[in-house]
Amino acid sequence: MAELVDLRDKISKYYKFTPAELRGVIISILVLAFIISFKNWGTMEFNPAEGIFNLFNAVLIVALSFLVHDAGQRVWGLAIGYRVEYKFSALWLMIAVILAFISNGSLWLIIPGGFMVHHLAGHRLGFFRYGINYFGQAMVALAGPLSSLILLIFLKMIYAVAPNALVEKAIMFNVIYIITSMLPIPPLDGSKIIFGSRMTYAFLLPAIIVATILMIINIPIFLALVLSMIMGTLLWLWYYISFERKIWSGPK
Image 1 (tube, rainbow, N blue to C red):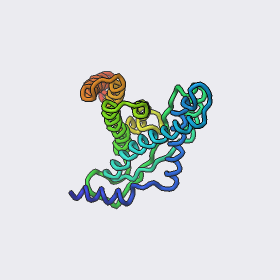
Image 2: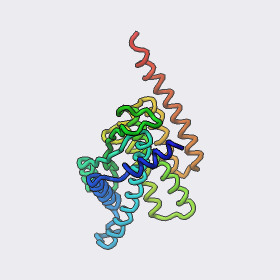
Image 3: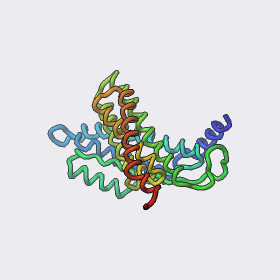
Image 4: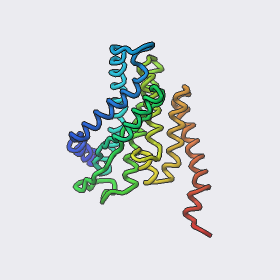
């Protein structure tokens, strides 16, 4: 109970975006929305009215997906004693726009940026928090793709009841967003997870990717999650036997 009260207090004090973060969030959302709506500015020729309408829908999709992803990291960061600060990547966003022009909007590169963590030294309840460590950052990073995966499950449930193009596009965006965020490339979440725990990453990368792909091909959600856990476990064992065990045992 005391930990919940402490978390609520930290959320009220530290969850909000700074002005610099807010600018980065707005830029990231607008750029990604432009990218995923690039092909929808007219079916046969350029149509400003149709394009603006589709851009508006894309902003809704990206904003929801981004804020859910970010919220998972912020809340979990606060729970273990870190304040999370979003840092947008102008370089990756520029590359994503160039790729959209080259591919005529067929390729979506969803790399809005990454995050930094700041130690909240004044809070001493719960998780070990005497300084910033790689494992703590890895757990904060992991909260993003897991939150997006939960959102994806909800979107799939909505689509099953009331299928429409907007929800379908939101599903596709989140699938790409989840898979991309798990790649071990800075500043993506995957790079922080692999630095924090290679064994954790070896299980989570295949598990999350398999779960998202199976959901695309309309495998039932529960079955997709079970199969993803099995695949993650098998590849985790293969990684441990083939690589990690040799590293820990050292040269003979």
